[in-house]
Amino acid sequence: FISVIVDRSAMAKIFQMADASNLVTELRRNFDAGVTRGYEWRVTQLKKLLVICDKHEPEIVSALHDDLGKPELESSVYEVALLRNSIKLALKQLKDWMAPHKAKTSLTTFPASAKIVSEPLGVVLVISAWNFPFMLSIDPVIGAISAGNVVVLKPSELAPASSSLLAKLLKQYLDPSAVRVVEGAVTETTLLLEQKWDKIFYTGNSRIGRIIMTAAAKHLTPVSLELGGKSPVVIDSDTNLKVITVRRIISGKWGCNNGQACISPDYILTTKEYAPKVIDALKKELEAFYGNNPMGSKDTSRIVNLNHFDRLSKMLEEKEVSNKIVYGGQKNRENLKISPTVLLDVPLDSLIMSEEIFGPLLPIVTLNNLEECFGVINSRPKPLAAYLFTKNHKLKKKFTKTVSAGGIVVNDTAVHFTLPTLPFGGVGESGIGSYHGKFSFDAFSHKKSVLFKSFLGDSAIRYPPYSRRKLGL
Ligand code: NAD
Image (cartoon, rainbow, N blue to C red; front, side):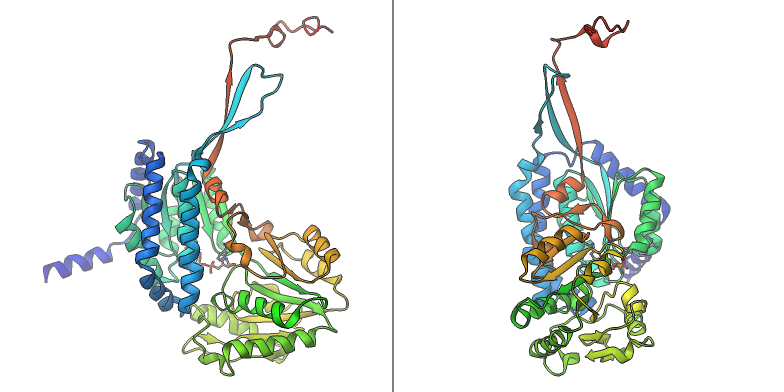
């Protein structure tokens, strides 16, 4: 009976300012003592993360199902397998990443040698979002550990089962003197943000991104902001529509957490003439994938919570929008399901075309000719991703040159996220900084310039009294 009371009071313990400050002080002490600097420590922690993925996949899949109704395969692939790859890559390349790089010297510094040394930033904070709660939490932690930092992870409160599993597993496996998880919502995050960090890595929406950056500015703390935006998909009529284009759009939209993904296709741009063919193909493939009762399909996630469900409903029910549904439109507030929904020519100033959708609704905007797509995309805030489907090489070239986005994929959607050789991040409103693979290591490192001068070759020219004569002028 007594132990129950003790446990309850422990659970009820509120995270306060002193806790946040003590946490950072303790971790800073451990960082300063060099706990995290060595190669061996980093490798040991990364291997433990691999054990978490290997041994606890069923628990992870189950937590994701509780939080989002995520299909098992989606969880296994997008959250666990991708993390496994990310850890394995870090383990394989860490020595190279950590090694100093020689830099060229010049006549002015001759004789000398120079190198670039990657040093850990120190005590870093990772704040993650709910939509891919494991991936978006552990992937930055891989970068932080690889680079030799101590790290505090604050998972999203909107995915509570995943948050508490992350707290449990990281505590069980990783070195508690250097890696901690603080669970909580706005209050806890605000207390953490009051502290002085050496880096804040935030994933989430741009409104909170501004709060993070403001807090960071107080201590001149560098930030990575992994934000979102409205990622367009341009479909040219010269494409492989049925077999490739619409399947790949469906996979990146409804097959990635039911549209609740930062690089999810947000809207389609195509010509008036071609739109009916696109709609037709989308209908056919959606029905082939999710059947004629998509609300009953187990192959799409549900909406994360009532707030987001109501936000999406509001978009859908707006005047001049609800009558533009050409496919789907079913929703159920009880089980938070919304069916794959396609809309045609909604007003450009409607909610659905002004805000990031982050859900299973996909508007199609029609153009008189495809060239107009550049005006539409470039007149809006820079998106996290931009997609183009075409066989036309000239168009591919123009698109990659003219469109500014975090990343561009030609003839597919979302898959660039899986390629660790590409930096993943936004530009403008869609974010600051990037990560994945070596870019994660760099995001949590300072590139220190080190120049070794010789005592030889000292020239009188640089010392006073200055004289043109010394220069031979
Ligand atoms: P969210 O609600 O989980 O919030 C993100 C984090 O911010 C959470 O940890 C939360 O506790 C914290 N937070 C919330 N309010 C806060 C406040 N007032 N002060 C300090 N911290 C606060 O996630 P979200 O914002 O709904 O996530 C969706 C957004 O994130 C979309 O815009 C999406 O595009 C973007 N996103 C981007 C990426 C990427 O890699 N670029 C990945 C996933 C999501």
